[in-house]
Image (spheres, rainbow, N blue to C red):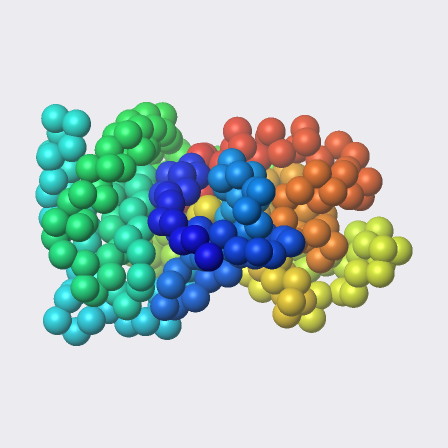
Length: 322
């Protein structure tokens, strides 16, 4: 058996993984707390094929790695630290956390910057070498994030004169003082009543509580309305439908536990966009990845899903508050 350490680059995340070449018939992907991401493959499979498979499974690999990290708490004598390194003529600040993992992982976030998770035994030299070897990835990701940040609308202050979306419609916002915190919708206006009109955190929390309640009712009802489309394919109705604030995706399907989770921001999208997300997640009960078979099946359930996918991407930055 031959074993190699390789790096997978996908979006704003770079993951180190172990590639094992064995006398087996199929590619095997697994995540363990001890070794992190491991891939076993037959000798005749090239790296490009393996990484294409990994990218298609990224929506499951990243949560699995995060779960593995959580199962191994950071060493008590190695808390999260702020570090800097010169890369490409730039001084890069990053957040370093030592964990009981095997591989170094670096990621770049639009609000949290560069973050590095490293094995407890990794030396600073090991980390520096890894970061310098990742120079192109880090600089490109930082530039991309800076460009996206500059184009993002400013965060809502929840003051009179702003606007908010609700089920695809754009509403004028009015904010008044009140004895209790609540929201009312009348005509083309969303009126927010709060006990302290100067408290931004309070106003944001009131709005997020409102959309969570509305999203729960709307999407749960929609799931039941369109379920007959999926029952014909032998899909059972979910054992549980959850709702929570999610900023990186509209929905999530855990086919093994028969649980669907939706972002509470979903209620701000137009009705057909919400329907497209629900159909997308139900389709994952048949196909766990984003393969050609998945999209072919999704198109059968909702032939025009692609046009609503474009609308969602255009609205995303206006309605998700990070």
